[in-house]
Image (cartoon, rainbow over the protein chains, first blue to last red):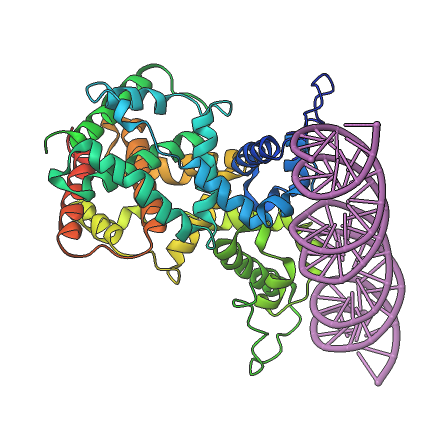
Length: 197
Length: 197
DNA sequence: TCGACAAGTCAACGCGCATTGACATGGGCC
DNA sequence: GGCCCATGTCAATGCGCGTTGACTTGTCGA
């Protein structure tokens, strides 16, 4: 992980003593680091270096590595902006995003990687499941309208996740006719779920 | 991981000296252990205990932990049995499987967890991507018939993966009307992709 | 101005890990 | 039967980790 740990940018003015700001910086660094390399491969020393802070503060402020991870997870699955999405363009926007390459710099990519990391660990998976139910499925269900209940939200979320994984594995962006056909089909699939059916 | 490491069943006859068999035992143990607890939480000591072997043999035979993981990954992404699937029942079979709970004892679940672990690591993701292309997308494409080319296989694979992840996170099986509606919708979604369209 | 307490620093500890090299031993070949 | 190399065993080493406790320093109120 040394590639991520930039050594406390020298030009930056030394932060005034502020426990709240330090806590926030550590939390932000933790979200990025956990998303990039997962729970086990991320050391507290990495996070502290990324936050320009000291290792010893993390057990003090968050009660340990697990506590930090839990808080980072809560902060990542924040109340979302589903209500802002334009329903008429939603499926095509998603399809075009999925046809591209996974952009590491995109915070949404980081968020997703973080969640996927959490999903693959048997210890964190149940916690993630509960968080997804509360902060992801429920909002989507409300956004769709509750005629068909929770089940459409579940299917939509699953499809969405699947395309994200596929994009992650694929690496490169799609090109030419395959890209066009892919976008058309993904749009149709999503419309089939969020549509009146 | 101590829960997995059964201490070299005492009744078993001591294996005759056979490098090939030992290697195979270690590889099999590694596949199970990596799938269950992931790369970082699995120690070579765990694997050796599971295989009834000695830790020191692993660096010798596989060049180290990473080499073992790579070989285990190769062995896991084996030629599949897509050709056996009955196309007329495929979508409903998949849908009903997805409505259930993820069974940890099922080797397919372990395999999938293993692959998902690999997807989140920047080093193993490209390897996984190539393997999926060769051993998953290509067979699906052939199975579907090649009129629509690679793109339908891609979409189908993504949807399939998505539902697997959703099942993994969900934990419990679906019940009652939500289960029925879920199965109906998943069947429809899959049919929409593998159908003539 | 100065004291007190919060905030930050630093060194050290114990632990588990992968890896190494020296050593023991079984079994096939002459 | 006896050598000898492949095979397996064992102890030791070095490293990175999370965590702890003692220490220093900044900042704010009196």
